[in-house]
Image (cartoon, rainbow, N blue to C red):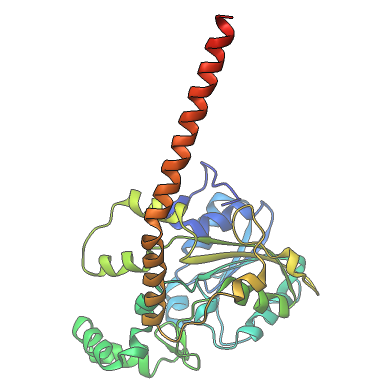
Length: 323
């Protein structure tokens, strides 16, 4: 990741999206955390930096439980004047939102000119099909049975059927899907909403399998999760954008040091199903396995050539020595 995590960062790589946001926020900034949920990020930010922080969330129960004067329940419009904030953070929220362009227009309205938007979303990748956030849509009867057994029928109905906040769990009722984004898809959404995308970084790969393992009450070593977060770039996307009228594709960045062209990201195959995606990945592994003898042979020939060149140089050096 291009932005280093400092030793004083209160989140570290365990919560890398929050850690990344913390690094980009400066003292004296006025910050809005959109979809703040239980307020952990904004409260930690307020304690560790000299900033003015506010939060909003669509879940009224959570906002009422927090009972903080700087956290507000919203249904649609933001209750703030134009240009009120230097920074807006939006961590793991956009994938829950139905009217994404309206939300971005409201964020743009309350941001100052050249104000910063920092967001994270799930990335579309080989393990997307393991997202248990979509089980309630794919297997509604199984999900209802499981949730009712674990909690109660009344709680299931309140949370997933008659939710007063207009949600199915934590997803907008009209959306009814926990979305995963491609890098180009996210960049295009932000650009068309008046933001200049500065950077798009990926992190992690095995996060969804790890979540399923934890659901089975099996502990995962922290070092393994940290290794996954810092080594791979496929599970999540971290995006930084500024409020601006126009954005060129040259402003989009993906990997740490290399620009990622949106047209290259679009060339990723559009899979009809998770099974098709897995089959394609297995086919790629098969092709790699089939080419292994050739690769090994070329490596052996290369090593033999290098040995011969070393012997020739040694013989030449000896002949010059004894002349």
